Image (tube, rainbow, N blue to C red; front, side, top):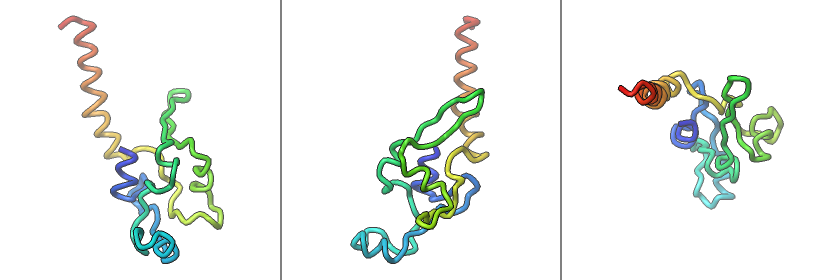
Length: 116
């Protein structure tokens, strides 16, 4: 869900844009990325491929194993991303996970344990 939100919607967890390509990027990419088009996160090498979810003391943590992750989330001068709120689930995504994935799993698991 997180990858879909970033790559298709180009939005952070609050629905804000994550960034836009510059004229320089359009030139460097030979026109494959047009100036003003939204970032997708896909073309950032291993950043997108390195996504993971980890449980720490009952809290789910989302991040990327790619070393560029620190730069993407920083306020540094080379960072052109508009948001550092990239990881996590929106309220809508969380509701979808609970109702479509977790709840059916728990119900089926309870039925199996109770043999009903």
